Length: 282
Image 1: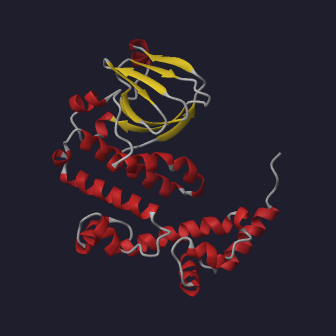
Image 2: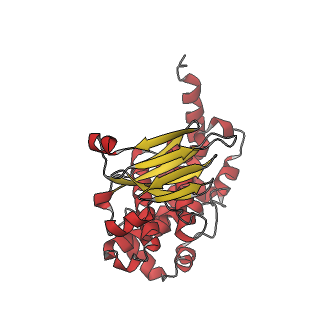
């Protein structure tokens, strides 16, 4: 699995340059896909020049000189980046290079899916364990690969296993975005991705859990985080469960106890007790 990194940065308005000297000193030999928030960002590389506004996305290459302009339009320029090691991307590098410093479509299709992904990890990371963070990184790499492949009209040229991983990545992302929908079922997922339910189950044969078990586990993870959140102590447990698709309290209680060894009420009491007895850091 590629070691994918997602990072977020804020900048004061300024100009930045990466020269041949910088590249010789240190080069991670990677592409970076980045999403712009706040004020516009200008990017120049390989004689391409583009101005990116909030919600726009572009690609740059660490192995080539580049210039950036972080503009001042009343808000600090902010960007979210995902690192894509060159050796890990199963796409022709000469053609991928053609995409650097060009405006990439971020509001429809796989671009919208990738934009949603890039906007999410910084908010969800504090609630994820190491294994989940690794899975999210893998999902991000596959989404970015699919997005670039679509731009190159080279999807059919991807290795079969990569096409499978891209489809799985899309399905995992779809599940994460729709956990609150009580109608989220294997049939619903298969129909949305224009595959049969049988094909969906075959895709998950190499995964740690079945489709239904994956949905249940991720819903339980969200419920567990909400139950431990002191800001939500006044919310009834049934309401917290319902907002993640558990509409029958008794079923939720049984599933939670099977996963965590205690009832939701017991877990909330224990989380509250630990929070109250934890030493204060000054």
